[in-house]
Image (cartoon, rainbow, N blue to C red; front, side):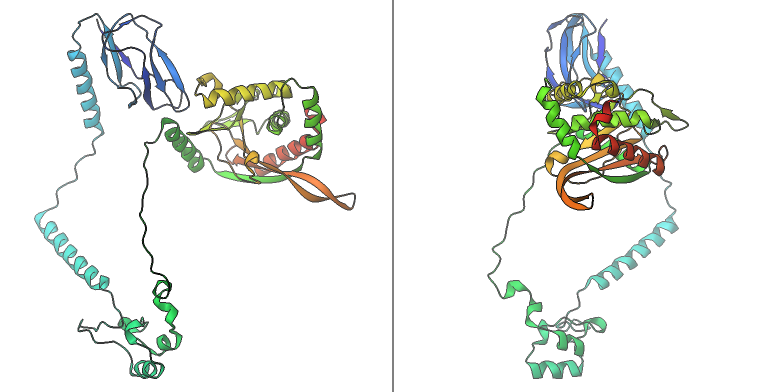
Length: 428
């Protein structure tokens, strides 16, 4: 008997999938465990293996096309087997679903109501036409071309040599009055009347279909922004010692450690001291996570991916640096797997490398907080009563007020500031 292969749900956020490539064509033999197709999800392109042995009898979604989860992807069975009955049954089920979703038809208004509505519409149209008619200085009340202006305005215009057809009236029904003449000047005719005529331009644009990744980003962040009551806390952090510590670490580290790697480790240490920030809103309860999994926002061409550094509080700077670099490479190649991006308890978004000094980020569900990190800036600071050069970084913590209060978020930032100002304490 033929087996139906449906569009798989390859991640917890996918609602639609796109067939990036087929590894088999209709008529090819298929074995269980063989790669049947590559499916593009909202975060990666993943290989999809066949669960059945047989012949590929039917392809339901062509390469480059998308379909919702559970749509017919393919049919596998015995060579020559008829699949028309299966397809007919699937079409009937789909039609039934659409019929169930149709809204109930509105009741037809009575004849008297129709007449009343029609008369009302006619009156509205008449009013719109009357109000839409432009009123200018050279249009009479009856549209006979006479200039509408007060006698005093006409006299002043004649004395100043002003053509009333060039004056916009501010009086009743567009009538030109004294103040219009007194405030009128040639520039009001428009700058193009006195300069080189505009040669004109050509409007143009391109439109591209929304990718699965962008659809998911739009949906998840809109849900977060409009369902979680965000509030923001911003703090400046002295990074002088962090800069020196990074230079010392990179002299002996097998892999180059970035400031972002240090921030990840510092956040993990701060979360260990402030477990109420390492939390999630679950509707009827709040989950306080004892493990610390930090999501790291990574920009790719189509959007944003957030792979997760697991048990970040138990890892060294070089270990975190190695892991983040591997994630970045896999993200660019669309090779991240669901296990790479699931399970975050806190997220960091860093735009400092792009010269951004300060910004706010939208919380990444299911986290209760996200830290937005700006760049390190050289500014004058006061130390021991003297103005000296300093390196300062601004961070902004976005908090879900259902879970985290202002004092809780502020205490977390104070600890983070202390750790980064004296990086030796991060490892204690």
